[in-house]
Image 1 (cartoon, rainbow, N blue to C red):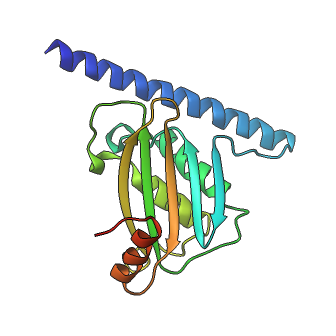
Image 2: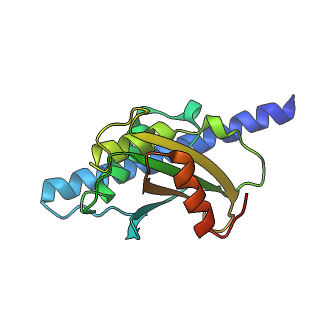
Length: 176
C-alpha cells in the first residue's frame, strides 16, 4: 500500500512540475510576443532528409491520463510552431513515434498522449487531415536516462502500406 501511495505522490509531483515548466514557457512566449521579439521554439528540432520529416522534442511524451489543458497546449503548439518553416506536406502518411523515457520501468504503450503530436502535425500543415484515410501511426519506446525525448518520423505512405513497410524495413537492414 505504501508503494502505491508513493507512486501516486511521484506522479502528481511530476505532473505539477510539467505544468510549472510549461506555464513558465508560455509566459515567456507571451512576453516575447508582446515585445515583438521572435518566438524561438526551444527544445524541438526538425530535419528533412530523403522525404522523411523527423521532429525531436526534448522530454518524453506524457501519459494521457495526467495531461492538463496546459500540457496539451504546450505539446500541440511546440510541434506546430517547429514545423511552420518546413516546406513539406503529405497526403497520406505513416507517423512513427519513438518515446525515450529516463525510467527503466515498463509503461503501457496505449497510455501516452499521441493525439497532441498528431494535432500538432495537422495544425502545422504537414498533414491535411488526421483520419484513417490519411494517417497511420505506430509507437515504440526505449530508455535513455541521459536524454529523454520524443522522436516523430513522418513518412509519405505508399498506397499499399505493406509494400511501404517492406521498403522501410529493408532500408534499416532488418529482415522479416
